[in-house]
Image (cartoon, rainbow, N blue to C red):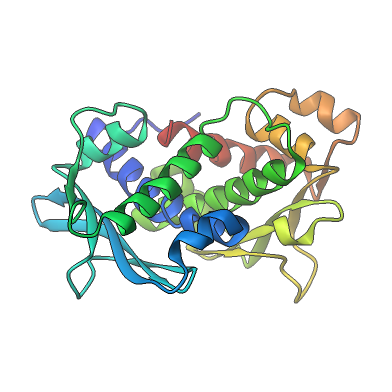
Length: 268
């Protein structure tokens, strides 16, 4: 049974997930979309997403250089060329959950219009991708969405542990050194994993290669993965038909599934 959390805790968890699990996916999307990279060629710029808090600011900033994007946690040391500044964590969470108004302050939008325009294109691409209710028709789009969602889930569970979410932190505290992985058969570039060890967690992109993971949630195709991730497929049926294979004890699959749903509920 899930532990009840306060509204303030929910806002805290959601804000951290949006800033530090969802927003870093702009890097993944830019890497996968040559058409979006063109707008950043021969450019060097800093963009930032932030929200005001009683203690100052929470933020993530991005360093764009010649078509690449490097996300950095925290407020940029140099003044960003463009910045989306939200007046509070509640404002930021509401915006990312689809409540578009009031809009955040858009600093530098006129002075650095091309940077602002390209940054908004990236954000809208991410919003459209993650907001899809069913699998995209194009296989390339399916793969990108699976990659993003695997990264989001692994990083999101780790963030909740570090913030002290009662359920996730209690699970992590009792865990020996274990690797939990997400994978698609024949698509190693889509993989992600989470390392849990005595209360500490670390999320990473790609495959864990030092040993066999303790538990892997493996799908037979990107479309099958999206069936579970978007909750359009039944997990039991997918397991029976081997669209989903739990490599490890099924009880650990159920446990991991609970935390995946928890992350999803906090960013919807």
